[in-house]
Length: 278
Image (cartoon, rainbow, N blue to C red; front, side, top):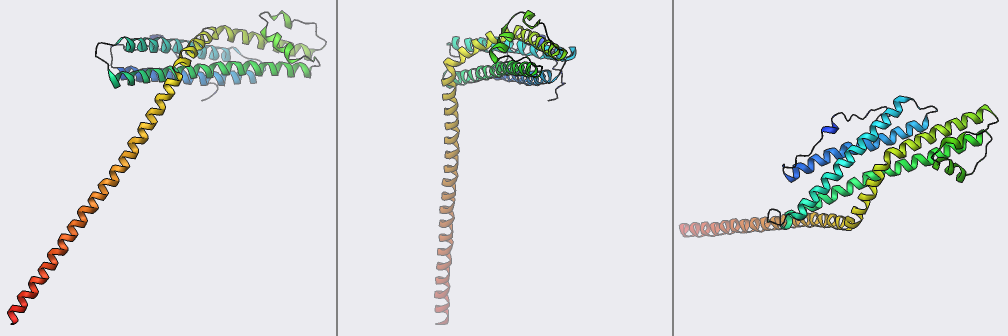
């Protein structure tokens, strides 16, 4: 994906899930939206790297990042709301419409998608933390070059501060002033980023709590599915071997029958020739 790719979400506000459609049709729609969410997260990571590499971030780059964030927030909220609603519907279905193996299959699909959504939000959260770490390294490196030696704790204090006043220092050189100006700019970017992701952080914590309770269950179902697949594969192979053995036995009986017929025919021929000569 190109760094300059602009994620389009023009149609996203109108995205809805057909609640009256079949279960698997809904699952397919959810997977499509989740694929777009995955693209948004990947694009956001590229935009953060691109922003960090620039000396001065222009307005277009900020707009692209805001566009990615808007898409992520919208799709994440949409997916969470619909998946949890589907989960509740499956739980409430006790009138015989979904029973036995069908109900377990529905639960597995929903829980697997909830886990995937949680994983995407975790990737998003990790990308934001990585960006913050790289910004701290950049600020420290620039200040060190300018002759202003500060500790990592002091850098973190600067970044954690909600005010930019901490960057308004009396500076001894233009190089140091440039370093502080860049640090102030990056600080404002982080504050803006943290404001944008507050909803997603709450959503991630909520999803993480839900997934923690059902994670082992989903993993266990995954193992059972894999085991079942292995059993089916082994059974299929065994069935093929059995069919081959039966075919070999049939062929052997056929050959034996043909051999017996030939031998009987030879014996009869010899007797007939013997009596004719005699």
